[in-house]
Image (cartoon, rainbow, N blue to C red; front, side, top):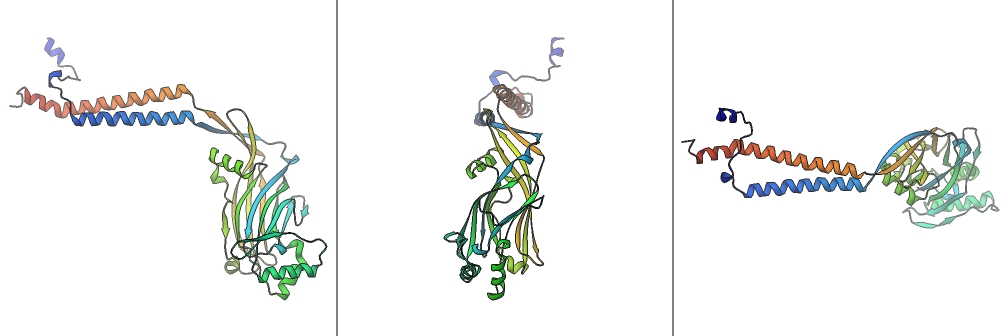
Length: 332
């Protein structure tokens, strides 16, 4: 009766005297221990890193604010003397040749800096045109960089010749000039953060895909589209707040955009048309918990041990059991 009862055992054990250590077993043990250590190390990195989660708030006060625009753009074949940055909002307030914190820097045909360009308010139209004609003959471009402000209402800002219409007409008629708006946008972002802080936020919170107008360029637009031609960037701006683990918050603005190149009928301009969301994205950082690390580590060790036990049982039942039977003479 005792022997019949033992036959019910589904996990039969091999006697200790028949068990042998092997290089395969040692290598397997080190492999599984190393794998377990690697997975636990990965959980430790997760514990030390901050987790990012987001929520949505309604922004009620955006209409009472101004928004800072940070822009750096190179127009490779368009002279500074004809370049005007204009602002136009939803209520049709049109401000031409915005200066504020912007600089115009003359560059040659190889994008090397020539010097800072500054308008002389006392010069005549003819004097300005003579300077512009020299820039056109030398194939100069213009590098515009700096900051300016816009109202937090839908509108656009655009690069054009609107404030220098007379000079533009003179250049078109006398010099047979055909402007080319080929460009490179080095960066465009919104808010009071400087470029280093904005880059840090983008990297820490994983928002790089939302900033699509960085290092964007188009070359030879005059050859591709003819004259006149236009460029339109449609931008959707989302107010955002970034909250650190210590509770400090940083206000910034993320955006999505798409670009359209097209043939104009009677104008040449590069337009940045923007719209603003009434919702605010709030991103929080929270540190990992030690209890979660312990639970994951125990789960890894338990899972590894169970896998090793199942593998060991399969080998013993499938292969070593035959060796054991041969040694005791059951296979003869």
